[in-house]
Structures are given as structure tokens and as C-alpha cells.
Length: 413
Ligand SMILES: *Cc1c(COP(=O)(O)O)cnc(C)c1O
Image (cartoon, rainbow, N blue to C red; front, side):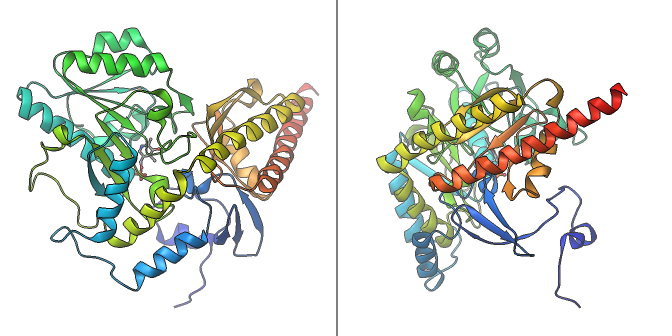
């Protein structure tokens, strides 16, 4: 059997649920990655908001090597030192008093939603089971989380779906008031919608949700899987908004690429997960926990968080300048280093075209729905790499604009 693999191999052996880029990256350092042919790229995607401290971070490599040589796995029949240290750090640094570890964002939300249902059941009985979520939200791909997520395309054809889930328009105070009531056990919301188009919640909306949850004894869940761990410019986005949830979920950047998710909550709420009610074989394993502990230590520093805000300015200003020239965006928005540029006029629906074209210009980009190009660089991307990435993006925009003008001229003739 040949050991040589390439992009065609994907179509031969993988379930066709993805359509990955035409090239295969094989190495990364900082904010640059290299493919099989040795081509180099500026990384404005960070593995979808995961490698927030860049690739091959020396301190993370050291921690991982140290743990690799000691102990890989125990399961939950034991506890382990790295996960206890990480839990201590997370409870010290946030509102939370208790932590549950798992392996992904979807699992963290699955745990949060199950805990909320169980808490409602324990305190108020079977009737308190309704979950309120937002349209266009994304909470993961497990059966429960696609049902709670607000994008029907992800749950279509998988029915019957778990019951008692309703959706309100994001940032709609009036709809929240109408939807949240005495049967509501939880409201789940992303402080900044990521996959749904990079849309920050208004402070009024999050305040209103907090107020309504308090009034109706419902739990407020913040899904910070994408915006958390420094990306907003604070350790967690709830700190920027000054609204404290009952449950917060984290994953993605938490392990900088080591698979780990966490559900953070209060002591009072945590009690509804008594022995045996929920679990995960790998959750909180020593390898991922050791790395995540170092990630939080490195991210939760004023210099780093200040740097996120400075880079936000540089990136949004750079994009505005490019937009003055090409007029491809109608809005540039987001928080910290989760930035979305919504396409204007003729370019609407073409986010995928930008992402694909970026490959041949040595740039890695993401989309957030068909109308939004998403920029998610490392939180510590060197300024020179940021500028180089912007330069490459300008070439991408120039190419797409030229192509569109060419098509228009062809149609006119
Ligand atoms: C990515 C994401 C998830 C799902 O995380 P996985 O690790 O892919 O399961 C959940 N919520 C939000 C907001 C996300 O961005």
C-alpha cells in the first residue's frame, strides 16, 4: 500500500461531509503554514478560532512534551493533576465555581443543556423543560445541539428532533420577553454569533436575557466556544458585557489544538449533576488539560488582551482601506479578533469564492455563511504577518472584482 496521500485521497476514503481546500498543510509556525508542495500561507483562520496562540508555540510544546512522557490517560475512575490545576485556574479567573471537562464545543453545550434540563426537573418538575435559543445560532453538531442551534439546514432530515426547543430572533428584546416564561429551563446564546455571520449581541439584549432568566428561574447559558479564551479582548466575552451567565461553555481555543471542552457553572447549579448523571471517558484527560492550563495562563495577561484590541484596530482599519478601493463590503464588524466582513451588492453570496481564491494568494480565510468573510487570526499574530495577510487579501479582492467586472462587460456585449 502506498503511503503517499493527497487531496484526491480524501474523496476516495473519507465520508463526503466536508469539502476541504485543494492543498494539504503539513507544518505551521506562528501565523504561517506550509503545504505539501512547500507553499507558504498567512493563517487568518487559526483552524476555526482554535490555534489562538499560533502554531508550534514553544511553551505549549514544552508542556505537552512534559506530559507525554509522564501520563496520557486515566478516565474518570481517577482524577488527575493537570485537570485539577486547570479547573482551579478557570474557577479562579471566572464567575464559575465548578467545571466539567469534555472534548469539544458540542459536548460542552450538550452537558450545559442536559444540566439545565436536569436542574429544572430537580427544582421545579417535569414541566420546566423548555429551551430558548436564537435564530442563526450555532451550538455544535450533536443531535441535541443541532436541534437547539438556529440554523435549520443543520438539523434537516435528522428528525424527529428533541422536543421543547424554541427560537427567537437574535437581539430582539420584545421576542425574548414573549418567549421566556415559567416553563423555560434555559436560554442559550452566543455573546457574539460566530458561524451565523459574526454578529455581536447588543448589551441590552444580554441584560434583558439575564433579567428574564432571573424572573422566571431559568438558567442563562453563554456559548463562548468561539469568542471565549481571549478572542473578544477579555478572557471571556461575558466580562466585556458585564452580564454573568449561570453556565458558560468553552472549547476551540481552550486547547490551542488539543481537543478539550469545558462547561463552567456555579456550585448551586452543578449539584444537579450528581454521581453517574453525566460523563465522558476522555474528558479532562491529562494531555489536553496540561496544555489548556498553559493556554489560559498565557492568554489571561493584560499585555496579551491589550494586544488583541490593538490588532482589532489594525485589521479593521486595513480592511476599511481595502474596501474604499474595491467596495466589496457593506459592513465590517465583530469583537476583538473575531471579525466578519459582510459582502455588498454584486458580491453577496460569494464568501466561498473569496475563501477559495485566497488559497492561490497564500492566505487562509474563513466564511461565516454565504455573505460574510471571516477573519480569525492568532491573538498574537506579529504585526508584520497581519500586514502581509492584508496585502494578500487585497490581491484576492482585486482578482474577484476584476472577474466580476469582466463578467458584467461580457454580459453588456
Ligand atoms: C464551533 C462551535 C461549537 C461546536 O464546537 P465543536 O468543537 O465543533 O463541537 C459550538 N458553539 C460555537 C459558538 C462554535 O463556534
